[in-house]
Image 1: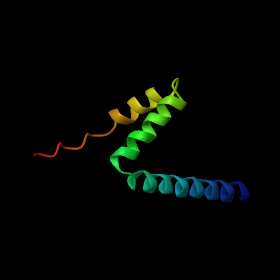
Image 2: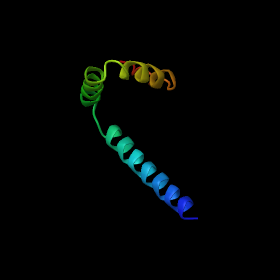
Image 3: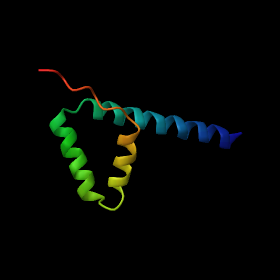
Length: 67
């Protein structure tokens, strides 16, 4: 029983941390988003590009604003 409660607390903690990260990313402007991605590409050149490609293939691009 204790293991189940511990696992539930850990899961809730991970979900809360993920939600906080999502909120922080959504609050960034375009320039800052580019800076974060550039940092991650430079910091993790062996793993991040594949992760980024995978993430990008799972989302739809935003529609281009018409001038």
